[in-house]
Every structure is written in C-alpha cells, then in structure tokens.
Length: 183
Image (cartoon, rainbow, N blue to C red; front, side):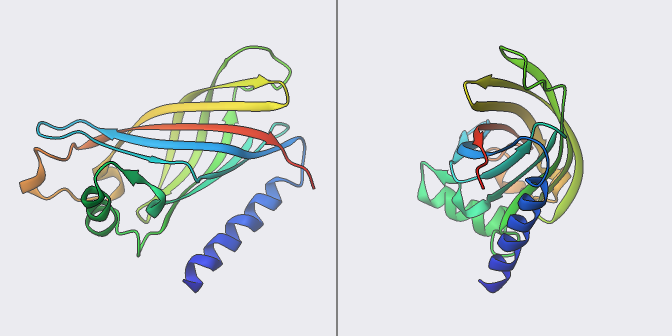
C-alpha cells in the first residue's frame, strides 16, 4: 500500500510540474475501456477513474489509471484480469506521458491530433503514436482516441487453452473531458 501511495504522490508531483506552464487542464470526466473479440466470448471493461493533465501551450499530457478500477460485467472476469493477466498487485497502474501534436486551442470544431509519448503498462515501457480527436467546447477540452494494443507488446501472456476466449489484441478507447486547472 505504501508503494502505491508513493507512486501516486510521484504522479501528482509530475502533474504539478506540467501544470506550472501555459494554459492547463485537468480531468473532469474520464472513460477508458477495452474490448476484446474472441471466438467464444467478448470481453469488455470500463474505467471511469483515470486522471489526466494537459497543457495547451506546450502540448504536454500525462495520464494515470489504476488497473483494479476496470469494471467487468462478470466478477470472475475481473478477478482473472487482475490476478492472472494484468497482475495488478505487481503492476497497479498504467501511465502515459507525452505530447499532443496538431491541437490548436483557438480553433473551433473537432481536430485530428496525435498523442506521442511513452506508455507504461504491465511493467513495460513503449513509445506509442496514436491518433485521436480533440475539441474545445466552452471552457472544456474533449479528447478521444481509439487504438489497438497487442498483449504480446506488454508481456501479457495468454494461456494456450484460453485462445478461444482471449484475443491477441484489444481495442482501447480513451475519452477525457478536461476542465481548466485552478490553483
């Protein structure tokens, strides 16, 4: 528990560093989901507790999500996800730190952007470059991305016996509604 608190405090310090420049936004609403289609059973889980910070002046972005906060329709799926596949006691969270490329805060309407940076998932750090959209609505910024993640890229093993139930890749959806950061 102490290790989780230290990691959480580190993330808060990282967020405060990003928040010390330009126009900053923090997550007001978060939605992260993944969907896996397999022969026998589809698997879907949602998480509404992710944290995000974004600086429009620099394009810097960071988010953090606790793995145990993913909710499944079936409790047994959630248990297997945390214990057997994601090992959430050993790897309690996933983080992303990078930049948003192509966003103009003064432009109206949806904008095509890219998130480029490092994601840490299941103890593996990878550079990613994923497409998305962003839009300013009033004083809020909406961001959305849908991308594919391969289990093998993050050392997530799939037992041979489970190949009909668990796909080799998952579709990930990330949606944040960001509000201005107020000190």
